[in-house]
Image (cartoon, rainbow, N blue to C red; front, side):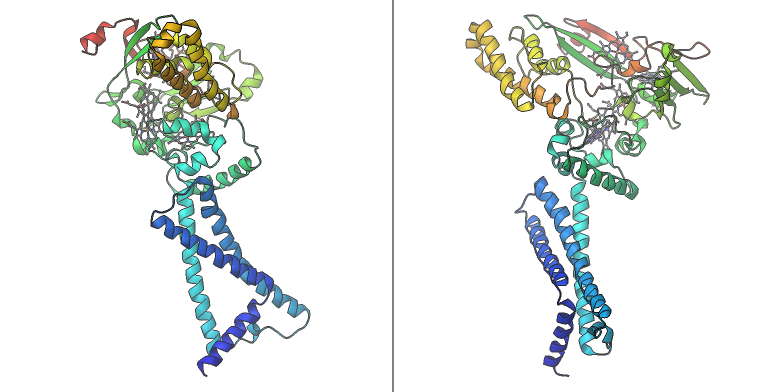
Length: 483
Ligand code: HEC
Ligand code: HEC
Ligand code: HEC
Ligand code: HEC
Ligand code: HEC
């Protein structure tokens, strides 16, 4: 058979099979999306294109979807025409009269084989790149901008800003990935239709156990010893008077004498503690079950446990304690105005020389602004206005300091309050410590007692040695050469 006849045979088969709108549309869709995808991968490879989140959805989700849909349309179109012809009693289409020995058919099969290989390669690459992209911090943090803005803003500012969202929220292994993707699809709907909750509820109910996430990087056996921390607070008086506390935290861990201290006593090779909580935020803990060193369970029950109303008890849930019960804000840390201002003053990001700065700034932060934009516009202006009218001399001399303070107070607001997400001061309490929220005192309040009269201790030296408490000029800092 001459080459010309073969080509004619071949095109005849292809045309007869493909000559229906659905197959043609499918082929056009697949081919064009394949070209765009390949062009984009090339651009990305040569570094001439940076993906932004919305383009990301188009490139990693929508285009591969169109590619796949086109591929599916091709055989569906052929099948429809065949079925119609059969129903109408017409002559069978060429497929049914296929002669596998004919070179035309063999060529057709080769072409189909090559195309399938190309398609599978494109799909594989698209799938891999899509999965990789959907695990990126950028996708998690920015795609649904308003929704994730609080968590993403705090994350960027945290010790974990180089750790991926996925490493805490998904973790290792295929089942977790599949679960995350399914939940992701549900979330895309929630965002599209605006049905997500504001704020996003916390605690995250199905967060993976810390053992499988945090402990990939921080294993409990690693911590021992004490940790020295100091905190400087500023009073709301004219001089913003500072006072400093110095404490030695008994972090503990695994030692030759067994497990000790904050880390060692709650977590161990054996799961030591579970607790009963009666509110969705796990802030009320009326009962704690503790396994002592001999492995015997001890039940600590709070004074008011017996008087709990029945509807509260019915809502109670039991949970195994892990890292996240103390470190519930390891990366999305939201502060109260007081602490955020103290930190900014202590770090010298703004000047404590400005009279009443702490008081005025706290006032401005607590105003109920309708949105972040209004707050950002108002805070610096109002602070400057305060000094211009109340301390005109200082305003003239220290204009630069006033402006800097305005910017710092504004940024504190923007990091901690998100009216659009109904997230404000104290919405997400931090369980470390006991100053800004109940924290450790949920259990260590001295009122949780066992049947044999033991209590979960609440004395001040259980968890830390207070080397100085709210002192103007702590001697210990001078001894350490820090003053
Ligand atoms: C170091 C681990 C870690 C990283 C990294 C991390 N998260 Fe979280 N995330 C947590 C923990 C822990 C919680 C609170 C869990 C709880 O209390 O049950 C949380 C809670 C959340 C919540 C629920 C609302 C809230 O504030 O409690 C959202 C939404 C969230 N994270 C999004 C993100 C996004 C987006 C990223 C990446 C930009 C990210 N997370 C990175 C650990 C992490
Ligand atoms: C992929 C590794 C990784 C994972 C997973 C991870 N962390 Fe971290 N964590 C780090 C790194 C890196 C630092 C920063 C160390 C530094 O700055 O010295 C850090 C710091 C911390 C700190 C000290 C913060 C501070 O202010 O100094 C705490 C507490 C912490 N992580 C808790 C957690 C908890 C709780 C989880 C699980 C929800 C977790 N981490 C998951 C890597 C990780
Ligand atoms: C009972 C509460 C509690 C539990 C449970 C707990 N921690 Fe901590 N952890 C603390 C406290 C308190 C500190 C000191 C906080 C500070 O530095 O201000 C701390 C400090 C840390 C630090 C910083 C250590 C340093 O030297 O700066 C890391 C990292 C850490 N924890 C990780 C973990 C991990 C991982 C887990 C789970 C295996 C865990 N923690 C369980 C209370 C807890
Ligand atoms: C869910 C309840 C619960 C929470 C929350 C909790 N603890 Fe504990 N803690 C216990 C129990 C139970 C014990 C063991 C009591 C015993 O020895 O019988 C314990 C023991 C300790 C010990 C050892 C005391 C000793 O006698 O050596 C320290 C230190 C400690 N906790 C610190 C903390 C700190 C710091 C926090 C907050 C960051 C905290 N705990 C939060 C339940 C809790
Ligand atoms: C169950 C453990 C525990 C007990 C009991 C406890 N503390 Fe603390 N305390 C902590 C932890 C943990 C921190 C550090 C929090 C942090 O790193 O932000 C802290 C921080 C502090 C600070 C620093 C202030 C600040 O801004 O965070 C002071 C002051 C303090 N404690 C005083 C006391 C006094 C006084 C008592 C006795 C009434 C007491 N604590 C009992 C665990 C405890």
